[in-house]
Each structure stands twice: as C-alpha cells, then as structure tokens.
Image (cartoon, rainbow, N blue to C red; front, side):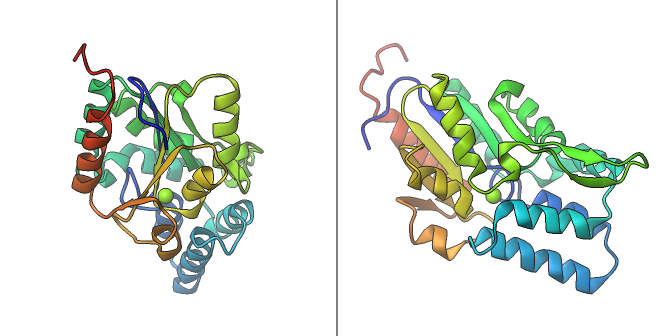
Length: 235
Ligand SMILES: [Mg+2]
C-alpha cells in the first residue's frame, strides 16, 4: 500500500461494525416467536457471512421468513443508537477532525443506517444501503434491485464511486464480514481493516492485512496511519 494522502476515503460497514448487531436479523427475530425460524435466520446469516451463501439469496430468504412490516423498520431506526458500538463516536469524530472523506456502505437498510450517518455528519450521498419494498398492506415483501441487494454489491458501489472520482486518496475499507474483505480483494480498496468487535469471522481474520478486535485498537491504528501522512504542515 502506498502512503496516505492528506485526504483519504474511509468506507465503513454498518452491521456488527458501527453497531453491535446484525440489524435485519435482530429486527426479524424481534418479530418471530417461533424458535425454529429464529435459528434458521441465524444459520442463514452465518452462512452468508462466511461466504457460503450468496448475499442476495440470504437477504431474500431472511425477508421471506420475517413477516416484517414498515413499522418494524421504523422502530428499529428509532432505537438504533442504543446499539452503537462503544468508541465509534470518538473514531468518527477523529476522522472528521482529520478531514477524511467518510462513507457507510451496508447490505442493511437505509432507514436504519440514516440516523447513525446523521449523528456522524456523513451526508446522504456518502451513505449506501438497501430500500425495502412493501405490499399494499404494509408488509415487507422484498428489496429494491440495487447493487447492495446482490452478491459483490459493496465492490460495485466502490467501483462506481471510483469511476466518478469520488474516492479521494487512499481507500480504506473497515468491516467484519467477507463482503467487506471482498472490496479489498477486488482491488477497490487499498487497505482492509478487519474488525472483530462483536464477532470474529475466522476467514476474514485469516485474510485481512490488518485485524482489530476492539474499537480502541482501531482508533489507535487509525491514529498511527494518519499521523504517518507526509504533509502534516497545516495541522
Ligand atoms: Mg458487518
């Protein structure tokens, strides 16, 4: 990896990284009384996270099991700040103070990601996630046909940003899952920082050029990364 420039792009995953939960699964399980269905959701998520199941298929399977409605998503959005990973405020404050370009790219849902993006001052145009589709009774029946509803979606988003010249400097991807690592493997990020804050995914940890298990370790790594920039004169 080449050295960092004055302004660089930091792209964060959301579920199990910025927040402590897998938001869609938590939302689904809150509304599922059937233990067998809950276990099935866990199993689907684990397989998707381990790269054994196509992301689009896992999303459709989970939404199919969910019985979720628009108000469930609204309720999750309202309480999402309670699930914020400890230390994230400091990390985003630090990166903003250092005038870095910040993005959230999530296979979750815009409605749930937005309150956190606003808290961190990340504009909507730097925030990428899915939109759900409703039937006429307000039941969630699927997901929009955007890149993030498909396998390789994060790489597709990064590729589009890169083509539009919207990724200044060195591109750093931060996340817990294989889809986050894949962005780096696809050559769309210059550095990948694997996170094991809430769950350590072995196949991510074994591949990641850098892996942190606590937000404090991430903060300290980002600090050393940014302090090694060549032109620090104006700070
Ligand atoms: Mg994640």
